Length: 87
Length: 190
View 1 (spheres, rainbow over the protein chains, first blue to last red):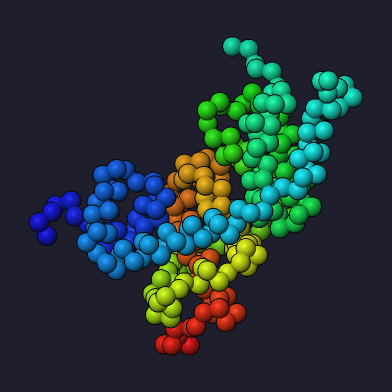
View 2: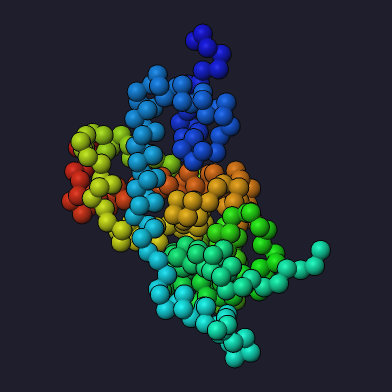
């Protein structure tokens, strides 16, 4: 290989999630980006795993706290007898 | 410098209570019980209110609150029972299902077929150490450094747990999707 900075499939796969999580240095990130541009199998794998992470986020964030919990916390903190709510 | 006063209602709502959904969700994943989760979320918010002067302005308030939640959860459960199962992570084989999915369903991945409840159930079935990092990262979006600070472990530990948690969950979801008939199993697998 002519490019001394080029990385192979193994090195790319090792840093799969760090790459997708944006946890790599700009230098390593661009090495991986260059590898993905040249390597269809790795590109497919990274693309699949990125879809997976987006899917996890989408399927797990709909659930929120019940409305009565928010009210109860605010009441306890700001409407105690010794701490009357401001009118 | 004198200690800043407790936050006013508006400030607390804007800075902390805005993360109540995240705190409640995470409490639910940690405890597995809606009642317990409400209790934990409420206690977390009270502690955050009392300890507001310890919050470093400009840092991630969500990460700070989730750390308080985790400590609250651990303190509560260490009192009543032993910490749940510890898993030897070297026994878990990291294994992407990418290749299986390609062969079985070139046009569509199983992701499209699974609904929220199925995914949440699979997350809840993960060993606690894995569930914790996966929820903090993939549900709540904390960075590796924030998670490391929160669980008091080195960043390298966060990385390896997260890697295995994601692959383990992926494998579970894939097997579930095959079993439920959502996708076809690859032919050369038993």
